[in-house]
Structures are given as structure tokens and as C-alpha cells.
Amino acid sequence: MRRRITIAILAVVVGTLVLTVAGSVLLVRRAAITSAENQIVSETQAIGAIMSADPAFIERSQADVLRQVGAFDRLTVVGLDPAGAVSAVPAPLTVALMDVPALDRGRAVAGNVGNVVFVAQPLSLTLRQRLRLTQTLPVRDVPVLVVTRHIRSPFNGLDYFLLVAGVVLVAGLVVAAVLARRISAPLERAVAATRQMAAGNLAATVPVARRDYPELAELAAAINTLGETLSRSQNLERQFLLSVSHELRTPLTSIRGYADAVAEGATDDVAGAVAIVGAEARRLERLVQDLLDLARLQASQFSLHTQRVDCGALARATAEGFSPEAGAAGLVLRGAAGEGLWADADPDRLRQILANLVENACKFATEVVEVGAARVGPWVALWVADDGPGIAPDDLPHVFERHFTSDRLPARKTGAGLGLAIVAELAGAMGATVAAESPVAAGHGARMVLWLRAEDAAGGPLGAAAAPEALPGTPSPESGESAPGTAGDGADGPGPTSALPLRPPA
Image (cartoon, rainbow, N blue to C red; front, side, top):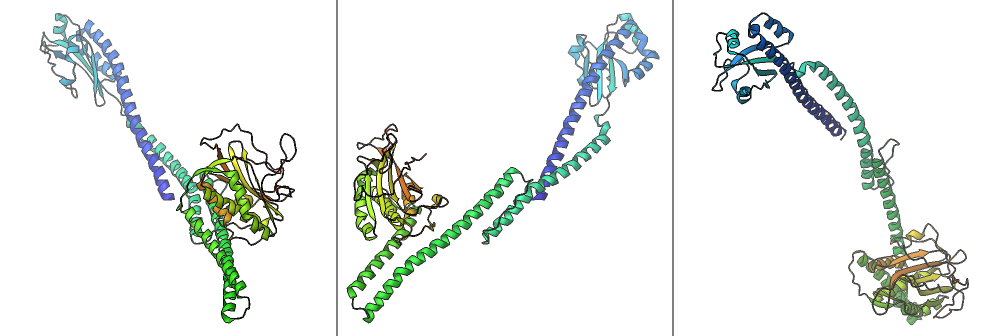
């Protein structure tokens, strides 16, 4: 690569030199010819004036002196006959170069043949003066003074040009080598690092030198970030596989143990053993279904049936449906939802999102899990909050990732641990936004909020001017007091909500 860059830069330098020299030669030659023509015209006019006064001047020795002083090649008089023919034109001139109409009008004609510049100047002579001028020129012909001069070649400074060209080429070679090295070295380091990553060494990084160009430094930083992301994804995937393997192994061990006990007659409580086997089988079915849901969501192989949904009623129904399960875990599940909270969504998918959020909250709650809905400006917010240990700040951006596992303790083993990943996929498919907030009360607790665009019951979007509803259990902005909870068991008991307000998405 360095060789190609160096050759390319040198080719540009050489091409620039050639074009510059060619253009300069043409311009210098044109300027020299123009200057010589202007000079020789004025000189020829002066000579013509002298000859008009003394036609024999051209035959005397003064003419030789004049040729030397004026640096002329030729000083000669030719005849222009009435038919328009010019006789005895000196070489390298030709009759075709003579502008006969202009000469007939008494005007001087100037031009060049290669590096030879000429001027043809008609002379105003009387008949007697013509006879004195020459014995060979016909009396009827108009005498025309033709003067030629050879201009110097613009290539006289060739040695100097070659010296300058050599210096420029050497400088271009040095600059090309330096640029090629500064461009190719970071790219070679990047190629080496990416090859190591492709071979499995995700810890490989691209060194960044202080003198690297900003664009190449950004490329190196992007590759390093890619390696870190791949390494993190690999670790998360490994943790995910270990978690799923554990989730599969535990029910399978129970099923196998109780099945063997029933088959061998080692237990008297056959009905209890069968019930446990059934429960563990359903747990396995739920895990497999979650994995299939994730696969379908990421492959976009699912359908949405969007319609106008009363989010408040759906939140209350979800709270009521999970109350027995929460009670079995020693938790209070309560609803806190307003009325007439309409949004466009798939009701089944929305129930699935709330169910997964409630299931996740039940893992970490200490006493209470709250399911709520409220209007916040042009948005409808559905949330599930718990009074558990909360989420570490570093974990908040990652809780909805597929392979993410939190180290929050303690946690109950409910579900397969894939609920939040499914929530994020479903929310994105419906055009909604989901966010995690923690802490929510006295340094603990977590709240998952789903944001949907508010609609009216008839079918039009609601404006942004509507006042937001106060979050149940939180102080009212106007009064500083807490708004009462609504709907659901335990609404007046302890709850996970706090003064932390709902923050609509940007």
C-alpha cells in the first residue's frame, strides 16, 4: 500500500511538472512572439520612413549596419503587382502569409513562421523614387519592405529547469514516503487487530499514535469499541447460556426424580409427585415459549393487531390477574390506574408486556408490587414498580438487553429471565418506548415505564396541552401532598412509588 501511495503521489508531481512546463513554454513562446512582433513593427515603420525619404538607402552599406543593430535576419524589398501577386518573398515566408488586401490598403502585415517573426510594410514612393530603388522591380508594382527576425527559443533555460524539476521530484518523493507511512501504518495496525478479532482474540486493540490523522484515529477507536462490544456480547451470551442451562436443568432434574420415584413406587404421594411434574413441565414450556418469542420478535415473524385500548382498565385487569401468584409469594399486588387512558396498541401484546414486567418485579419486591397507568402530557404511561433493592446505575442502560443478567439480590426464581428482553422487542414493534428507573423510594425500588401516545376514545390523538396526572402515591406538584392510590387491593398500604416523577421520553 505504501508503494502504491508513493507512486501515486509522485505521478501527480510529475504530471503537474509536465503540465506546468508545457503551459509555461507555450505562454513564454506566445509572449516572445507578440513582443517581437510589436517591436519589429515599430522598427519597420521607422525604416520605411527613412526609405521613403531616400530609396537608395536599402542598397547602401547602412543597410548592413541596420541589420546588425536591429538584429534582423533579412531586410528586403519585394513587389506587389496590381493582380495581387507578391514576388521574391524571402524564405521561410510564403506568399500565403501575406495579407494582400491589407497591403493594398497600405497597412503593415505582421506574423510569424515558427520562431521567425516578419513584418511587411508598403512603401509610399514616387515613380522616380521607385526607379532609383531597383532596376529589377517593375514600375507598376508597389514596393513592400519585408523585415524578418529570429526569436530566441524558450528552451534556452533547460538546464535550470532540469535542476528545479529534480529538486521538486526529490521533495515529492520525501513527502510521498512520509504521507504513505502516516496513512498506511494505522491501517496496517487496524488490519492486524481485526484479524486477531476474527481469530477469536476479542481483547485485541488498535494502538493509536499521537501523530495519527484524526480520521484514522477515529477508525481505530471505532474498531476498539467494536471489540469491546463484541467481547461484552460474548460474555453476556455465555452468561445467558449458563442461565438458560440452569433453568432447564432444574425442572428436568425435578421431573426425572419424581418420575423415577413414581415408576419405582418409592413415594406414597403419587398425586403430589404428578402435580410437581406437571408444574415443572409448565415451567419448561414457559421457558421454551419465551425463547421462541424472542426468536420471532428479532426475526419480525409476528403480527400486530393494533386497536384503541383502555390502558387503565388493562393495568387493573393485569393487577387482578396476578394477585393470587403474588399472594403465594407473600407480596401485595395493587393497581393504581386512572380512567379513560386510551392509546393505540395490540391489547394481547400489551398484556404480555405488563405480565412480563409484573413477573420481573415479583422477583425482587420485598412487600409490594404496583401496576399503574397515568396520563402525562401527550403520553400514556404504564408502569410496574417494586420496593426491592433497586438497580445499580451501571445496569440501568442494559436491563432490557437479551443476555443481560443482574446481580441484584435477593431475587425469587420466577419465570425464565427473558421477560425484559421480550418487553423491549414488543415495545419497539408497537412504536412505544420503555425505560427503567431506580431508585424510586428511599434509595431503593425500581420502576419500569412503558410510554404510548395518548389518543381519545373516538380515534384522534390528544394534544400535548392536557395536564399530566399525578403519579399515585407521589406528592402533587401543586400541593406537595401525595395523591391517593386508586383501584386494586392494598391501595392504602405501603407502596414502592415515591416523589420521583414520570419523565416522558424526549
